[in-house]
Length: 185
Image (cartoon, rainbow, N blue to C red; front, side):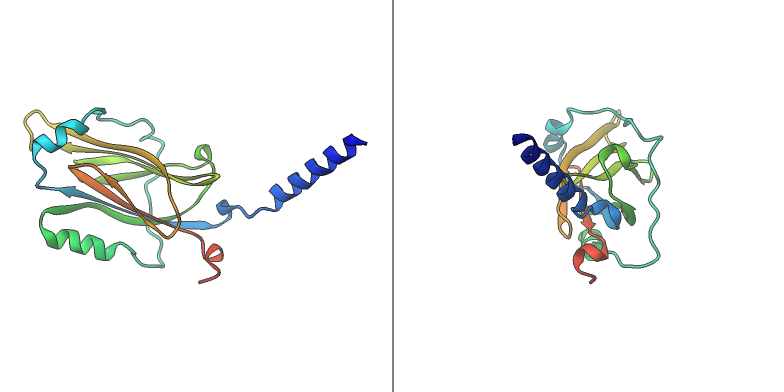
């Protein structure tokens, strides 16, 4: 008597999981803005230099993001304000569309800016949306060259601006859900 109840419960759960909407079915619009803080004193930076590897694993397998033909930049105002300030310099600003799958099913996007900035941004689904940001900024103005690094993985929410902080540079990232996920807007 108990076996049919367990089997029925498992069958119900399997159908519920199968019927659940998947975020990976549509294209997500991802925008990344990386900027340098030109006036950071060296004393403010030294405590953040624990991970000074110049090369990051996975760079060779990364995809160079291509900007879609439609839609605008949501962070364009932020980029203009940073440039206008004079204390900051935009190193990279681009948007792209991609499907979102499991961490192993999505290729990272290669982020470069001149000879100073290199790294990866990977947006994937693991119950919730996540963004993995691994960026290296080479500071050639300092004798011997110093490498600054942001290496952070966190849960992100669609339609929000997420800020990754380092005294020497920062990242603004937005992930916007597919049109069908936002009610067709």
